[in-house]
Image (cartoon, rainbow, N blue to C red; front, side, top):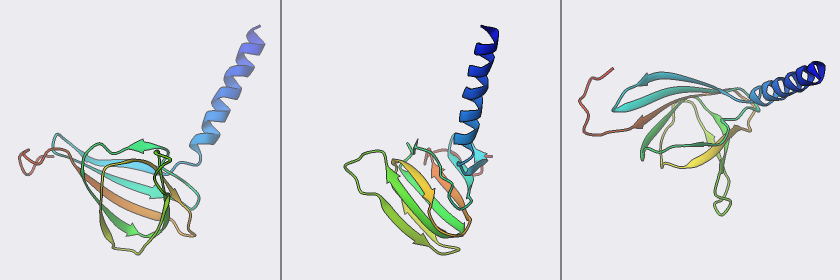
Length: 124
Protein backbone atom coordinates (compact mmCIF):
# COMPACT_ATOMS: atom_id res chain seq x y z
CA UNK A 1 0.00 0.00 0.00
CA UNK A 2 2.87 2.38 0.80
CA UNK A 3 4.40 1.71 -2.61
CA UNK A 4 1.11 2.45 -4.36
CA UNK A 5 0.72 5.70 -2.40
CA UNK A 6 4.31 6.72 -3.21
CA UNK A 7 3.80 6.00 -6.92
CA UNK A 8 0.59 8.05 -6.96
CA UNK A 9 2.34 10.98 -5.28
CA UNK A 10 5.27 10.85 -7.71
CA UNK A 11 2.89 10.77 -10.66
CA UNK A 12 0.93 13.73 -9.29
CA UNK A 13 4.06 15.83 -8.77
CA UNK A 14 5.51 14.94 -12.16
CA UNK A 15 2.25 15.88 -13.95
CA UNK A 16 2.17 19.22 -12.09
CA UNK A 17 5.79 19.96 -12.95
CA UNK A 18 5.13 19.29 -16.66
CA UNK A 19 2.10 21.60 -16.60
CA UNK A 20 4.08 24.37 -14.89
CA UNK A 21 6.89 23.98 -17.44
CA UNK A 22 4.81 25.77 -20.06
CA UNK A 23 4.22 28.89 -17.97
CA UNK A 24 6.06 32.15 -18.43
CA UNK A 25 7.88 33.86 -15.58
CA UNK A 26 6.17 36.49 -13.39
CA UNK A 27 8.28 38.72 -11.11
CA UNK A 28 6.70 41.30 -8.81
CA UNK A 29 8.77 44.50 -8.98
CA UNK A 30 6.57 46.65 -6.72
CA UNK A 31 3.41 45.90 -4.78
CA UNK A 32 1.80 48.28 -2.30
CA UNK A 33 -1.66 49.67 -1.58
CA UNK A 34 -1.57 51.94 -4.64
CA UNK A 35 0.04 49.94 -7.44
CA UNK A 36 1.38 46.58 -8.57
CA UNK A 37 4.19 46.41 -11.13
CA UNK A 38 5.27 43.05 -12.55
CA UNK A 39 7.77 41.86 -15.14
CA UNK A 40 6.41 39.06 -17.33
CA UNK A 41 8.69 36.94 -19.47
CA UNK A 42 7.16 34.62 -22.06
CA UNK A 43 9.60 32.42 -23.95
CA UNK A 44 8.23 31.07 -27.24
CA UNK A 45 5.29 28.71 -26.64
CA UNK A 46 4.68 29.65 -23.01
CA UNK A 47 1.57 31.15 -21.47
CA UNK A 48 0.33 32.96 -18.38
CA UNK A 49 -2.36 30.50 -17.39
CA UNK A 50 -5.92 31.72 -16.86
CA UNK A 51 -5.87 34.72 -14.50
CA UNK A 52 -7.96 37.73 -13.50
CA UNK A 53 -7.10 41.44 -13.58
CA UNK A 54 -9.34 43.07 -11.02
CA UNK A 55 -8.04 46.65 -11.18
CA UNK A 56 -9.46 48.72 -14.08
CA UNK A 57 -6.37 50.83 -14.76
CA UNK A 58 -3.69 48.69 -16.40
CA UNK A 59 -0.78 49.76 -18.60
CA UNK A 60 1.43 47.25 -20.38
CA UNK A 61 4.91 48.20 -21.69
CA UNK A 62 6.61 45.77 -24.10
CA UNK A 63 10.34 45.71 -23.46
CA UNK A 64 10.56 42.96 -26.10
CA UNK A 65 7.50 42.59 -28.29
CA UNK A 66 6.17 39.74 -30.38
CA UNK A 67 2.96 37.86 -31.13
CA UNK A 68 0.53 37.15 -28.31
CA UNK A 69 -2.78 35.33 -28.33
CA UNK A 70 -5.23 36.60 -25.71
CA UNK A 71 -7.78 33.93 -24.81
CA UNK A 72 -10.74 35.19 -22.74
CA UNK A 73 -12.30 33.04 -20.06
CA UNK A 74 -15.73 34.03 -21.40
CA UNK A 75 -16.24 31.82 -24.47
CA UNK A 76 -18.67 34.44 -25.86
CA UNK A 77 -15.72 36.81 -26.37
CA UNK A 78 -13.31 36.45 -29.29
CA UNK A 79 -9.73 35.31 -28.96
CA UNK A 80 -7.38 38.10 -30.07
CA UNK A 81 -3.98 37.80 -31.72
CA UNK A 82 -1.83 40.91 -31.33
CA UNK A 83 1.57 41.73 -32.82
CA UNK A 84 3.39 44.22 -30.65
CA UNK A 85 6.71 45.89 -31.39
CA UNK A 86 9.48 46.59 -28.88
CA UNK A 87 8.77 49.73 -26.84
CA UNK A 88 5.00 49.71 -27.47
CA UNK A 89 2.69 50.70 -24.59
CA UNK A 90 -0.96 49.66 -24.33
CA UNK A 91 -3.81 50.50 -21.99
CA UNK A 92 -5.85 47.35 -21.44
CA UNK A 93 -9.15 46.84 -19.60
CA UNK A 94 -9.48 44.49 -16.66
CA UNK A 95 -10.38 40.98 -17.73
CA UNK A 96 -9.97 37.28 -17.04
CA UNK A 97 -7.84 35.63 -19.70
CA UNK A 98 -4.87 33.48 -20.67
CA UNK A 99 -1.96 35.01 -22.58
CA UNK A 100 0.08 32.80 -24.94
CA UNK A 101 3.27 33.62 -26.80
CA UNK A 102 2.39 32.26 -30.23
CA UNK A 103 5.22 34.03 -32.03
CA UNK A 104 8.84 33.15 -32.69
CA UNK A 105 10.55 35.45 -30.16
CA UNK A 106 10.69 35.80 -26.38
CA UNK A 107 8.38 38.54 -25.06
CA UNK A 108 9.20 40.72 -22.04
CA UNK A 109 6.48 42.92 -20.54
CA UNK A 110 6.34 45.37 -17.64
CA UNK A 111 2.74 45.64 -16.49
CA UNK A 112 1.44 48.28 -14.09
CA UNK A 113 -1.95 47.98 -12.40
CA UNK A 114 -3.23 50.99 -10.47
CA UNK A 115 -5.05 49.74 -7.37
CA UNK A 116 -5.98 53.00 -5.71
CA UNK A 117 -5.74 56.39 -7.41
CA UNK A 118 -6.05 58.26 -4.12
CA UNK A 119 -3.07 56.63 -2.38
CA UNK A 120 -0.08 58.78 -1.67
CA UNK A 121 2.52 59.33 -4.38
CA UNK A 122 5.96 57.86 -3.83
CA UNK A 123 4.99 54.71 -1.92
CA UNK A 124 7.36 51.79 -2.24
